Image (cartoon, rainbow, N blue to C red; front, top):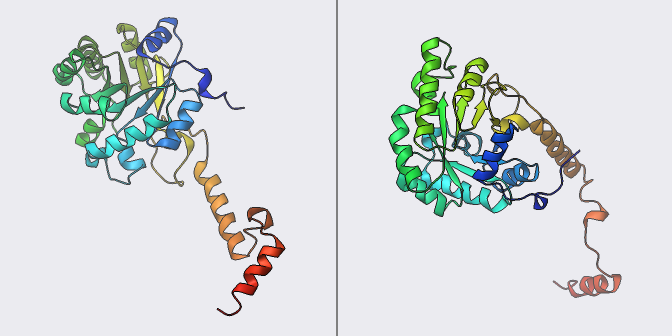
Amino acid sequence: MGHPPTTSRKKVTIQTIRALHRRGEPITVLTAHDFPSAHLADHAGMEIILVGDSLAMVALGMEDTSEVLVEEMLLHCRSVARATKSAFTISEEQALATAIRFIKEGRVQAIKLEGGKEMAPTIRRITTAGIPVLGHVGLTPQRQNALGGFRVQGKTSDGAMRVLEDALAVQEAGCFAVVLEAVPAEVAALVTKKLSIPTIGIGAGAGCSGQVLVQVDMLGNFPPGRFLPKFVKKYGNVWGESLKAVEAYRDEVKNSQYPAAEHTYPISKEELDKFSEAIKGL
């Protein structure tokens, strides 16, 4: 039935996120890649908006996330920031120097950094510099590329232990929360219980402290046949509805039904007659 405008909401901060976690209230996270998608997510009441590097594929038509440039990410971050009035905004980054740029130039409130124990020293440097970091363990895009595709993590006892160790390492390094991606639900729930920071699940079951999805996936922005991970639930059919609308526009233009009188601007008969007379000799 829709939600009230976000002007009625207080600005979400890390303290807000921690309070939700303490109360056991699930944290809502959604990606956005431009002004309209961020405006929608913010208006719908998302607590966190993530400008993920998935925009490389969904907004820029690239093959994978490794192709997107820092300048391109910054442009999208600024676009999202202009639309976001209440939600806490986070962007993707891997190093201290660029993390500072994303906070200052991209106007986001935090960054997301992928990797576990091996990235803990980098996370520590960034958090020590006063920049909030959202960790990301389990299946990460970099690991996905290295593995040659989508692979669930933590399906063995040893694998589950690695997920836990990675999550503990990024918590110790100062992350305020951590994304668990493509991990069995039972493992994610146990990892969540072992941490003192919130977990944000994507393909990790309902036992996490919150959930995140890629907006264009859950809205159904692309035509049927595009690969979607098992964990994606389509809440809409934007492609189908948009296609119908554009086809209707095409047909009405071809049939001279659009524009109708209500879509045009009037001119008085007197002025029209003057104009018609003036151009007779041209």
